[in-house]
Length: 397
Image (cartoon, rainbow, N blue to C red; front, side, top):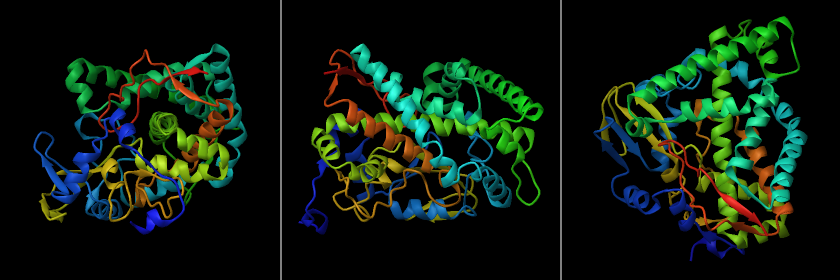
């Protein structure tokens, strides 16, 4: 029995949840034991599965660059696909909008929107935890932050669903989808340009106005960088947070003992949130490009080849996480890579944590039992780099 098991604590196996999310725990476990870094000829990429290799890659941007992350038709904003001094300056600018003080000021609004969404679902007697809860919550927070009318959230949703899709969806949908994505970018950039111009004429108490005014070393964001940051906020702050909330709901449903434990001791909710992010990170894979020939996990990676770090594997590395396939809300330390690491560590991590924690807390308070509608299948999202479910219908018991 491990030290982890000797501590007086409760833990639950996560295999049923992983199966629903199409997270191949057994395959990852075997790869970590045998071939930690595996080549995939279809994309000329190396797949990384061990924690130590991931940490090295995230912390060495001079060897493993983010600057080619837009290759292959993936629509990623410039601050995500950038390294070096320019990245540090841009990140310094936008970080001013995500200070602990700024995030804490959103707590009341997050609670208000969460309660409103749950109450509406409870009044109907049934609701979809994704479509009626996990998706609307972060999109309304983003609309509030940017100062954009809530009625535009359906348009935001359509943009995000188009832009987040990766190569697998392109194969399924064909060439026309690449054209649809290009048209979406033009439409979104035009919309954001009009919003930015409106703030120039009439500043408001919102994030766009603050970004217009923010300076680092006397330098402000360019028009294009402003638009791209708004796009980043939409993709990274909306779709990924929605998936995390949904993964949390799925976890509470599949592990009723955990739900009972959290109701009895709400102080464990922060730890449970971290464990949800470890076990079921919404960003399944992070992409880097080798800037030189380099060895990773005993394999020679050639300059220019893509390296993909799979958080769904690294977060289960037994050398770092004892009893890795057990969900433990008291796990400490919990050095998961659900938000990445290094220079590109997720800017919105504090906000995402707050939204997930608030969503689950009120869900537990307002619903004494989570009962899924058995007539609807639960399917994983259609994206190679997102981990989540499309729908999760609940009946209010």
